Image (cartoon, one colour):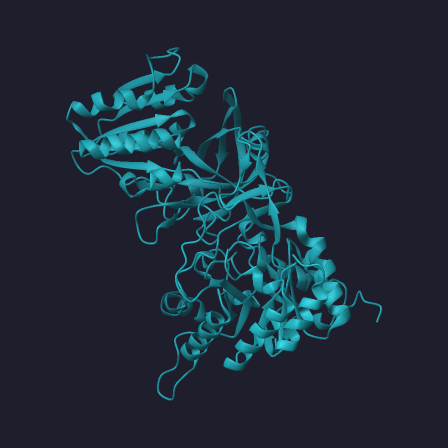
Length: 264
Length: 315
């Protein structure tokens, strides 16, 4: 894990309110695992003050580049989404635990919701390019076509892919959790990875638990330090101690250990 | 000629005047891979209570203009676990180890102090694996329902509490004052009457943020402690006021992000400073501030940093 200055090589609007940033950062590109994140300093000033945790969307080890997907939710992410190429961002990373990879022979199903697709694109990329070449299945839900951000990046890395939108503008109409049981009923899914809105992940976790399938969920939380010192990003879990740090103990948790009732 | 940064903070002799503030640096482990802890004047560890505390529900932090609000609620594994599992790591470094302690009653503080002193005492044939150079009495945490700030806003309770701990331990005592009072000097006097060696000021300011879209408080605890550069003028003012009234050594803190910010507090009367929120923004902040202080002093021809302490006062 390092702290370093990374030149921005690309900043493109990829959907309304979503920007894809590419940064030249070999130290992170060559070491990061899917599910890990970078802690990005927004400006050189102190307003906005705190760094923003952003999932890694892709890492290109050969070019030394990383990609992150930024959704504008406030002033900090708004500034980040408008950084001009050539500017330099101060990054800490890779941080967090990342997704445990499937065991040999396990078929992974990746269930994404909205901007939560980011770490799953990276996971799909790594699984697809692994020596054993996992057969990756993807399920991606969003409100509408505009919110189905980076779906081509995701779909292109899955052997089987299903899109679901609430308004039916792309793929099936509805929400992903309505389509998850049918995926699990096929009986070949060994492990589920999910990232998206918390109510969605809670439901994915419940469905997986009922089906006896392991589920890993990547959580998001506002953070202070990003390295486990401030305890600001704690979430309620059934583990000991009951408050786990999203930045250090996560962001990926076994879905069964998360106290979803308290975290929603 | 290099400036001598050696700092005398009451009975404490520090390598330099830059420490890390409690609650912002964990127990040192997380930051050790970013910076050499031996470069610091001292590390003030996470608030420690007699029994383990789960802390407050999430969300616990939010950002405000040039600042942040936190309501962690003193999550920590309890003093025995801190002694057994946390302090041995930090004690391997040559920086001062200061344990911030907090309780729900005076008896809690006394008991924690007693356990820390006992555990850190070397015996004839067994050197202790932990070192405790001082205790910081946290009588000003705004985020716990029992104890915490209740002690720090009442001068009689403050005096009683400090005196009770003073009677129990020979460790240097630092009392961390709350800025959430009308008269900071009155609180400082009470702590000094109780026997504190050093005054730490300031803790966070009680604040609140409301999510307009949800029409609800952002923090689960509703209120939180405001820190960051936004509060620095308050810290400078309070250090100044206490330094005008008392000769007790002051450890200044509150929104220090740079050596220049640290110098403001030193010139106002602080003998040393602690870096808090800046650690989150830049994990190497405290070491950078030490380096920049050294450079600034040398460029200004300052022989010893001690000559700057309180130098902005006309007395």
